[in-house]
Amino acid sequence: MVLVSSAWKGNANIMTLGWHMVLDVSPSLVACCISRANHSFELIRRGRQCVIKVPTTELLNEVIGIGNCSGAQLDKFKAFGFTPAPAIKGRAPLIQECQAIFEFCPADGRPIAKHDLFS
Image 1 (cartoon, one colour):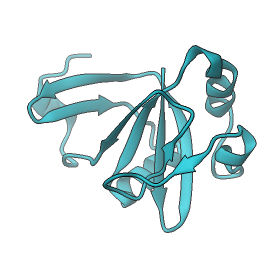
Image 2 (tube, helix red, strand yellow):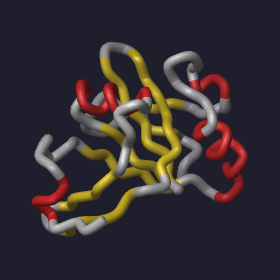
Image 3 (cartoon, helix red, strand yellow):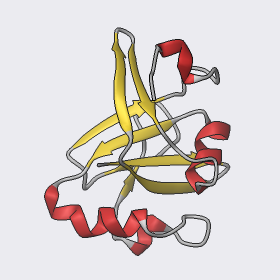
């Protein structure tokens, strides 16, 4: 499990993500499965960036809690005690409590089939 933060027009959110994988290493390309019904979907689509964070095992309860509520009704940074920090390259906030952080911009809007992904 990882946490994904996103931001658009001053609205920041965190989501728990379980379905992700590396597609390529040069350039780095990661696939993330995010439902259109998820609040983060529109923030990532419109903001054109996100930050993937690897939480420690000590954050298990927070990771579960974040995955069980919507950022449309709740500021998850405040609710779960996370400290947002400015990103190095983008607008989506980092989370200081996480051990590894990867900033990403969606590569394109084309279907995943171009990457030979089978389901």
